[in-house]
Length: 299
Image 1 (tube, rainbow, N blue to C red):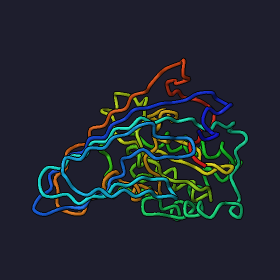
Image 2 (cartoon, rainbow, N blue to C red):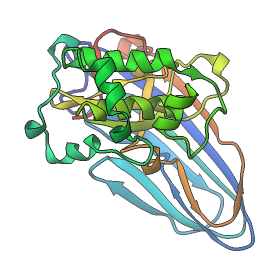
Image 3 (tube, rainbow, N blue to C red):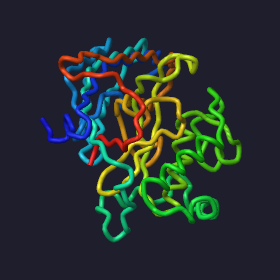
């Protein structure tokens, strides 16, 4: 077991079960799919058990992205009905830190693999948001507190509204419209961080503890920011409990980690997702809760 599990700062262990059911009708000719729905394996997140069922008898190709720790499934589906059902049980032993101890790293001290998360990307046009970032946050002392101020500002200046954006909505669009869903909140926070030379990346997964009023369980987008030699969790949408995030993928923005990338003509059904917590105090398995400490699941 990795040393970060059962952190002495917390003694808490989170275990979550989730499922993803996807269904498609492949039309006139075969179509290619790349799925990103399998639980990631990180320094603090491990897969206890998992299963995958695909109704078509097609070749399945698995790829592990060593940089992001994303696990991808690639297949070529024949015409007709395609269903993909994945279930996993995941255990998370967060690394906890006091926010007061976390600093913004100078550029010269950043690891090479962190540098791409300083640059503008398709949905995070940090080069166009420089003036706002400096005006709103340039006077705040660098560190966790400044990043959390960015998270709070995004949360307060946007309105969460289901169906208010689409696959082409960028951080600049969201800033103008002041409305969006979790991915839009994440893109705007990332863009502001990068404009201040703070590495930030987009993460996707499922979240336990979201308000049922928001609707059925769905994929959730959140932010990881590099502070003091680790990636720390932030949820600018404010709709979930960060301790209850199951990480599936990370990337520069949503373009890097779609749950399904499809090449071909298809009709898709709405994904069906579930998530539940496994609670057993005798084994140290607890419900995710909101905490004021900084949480990380990756170096």
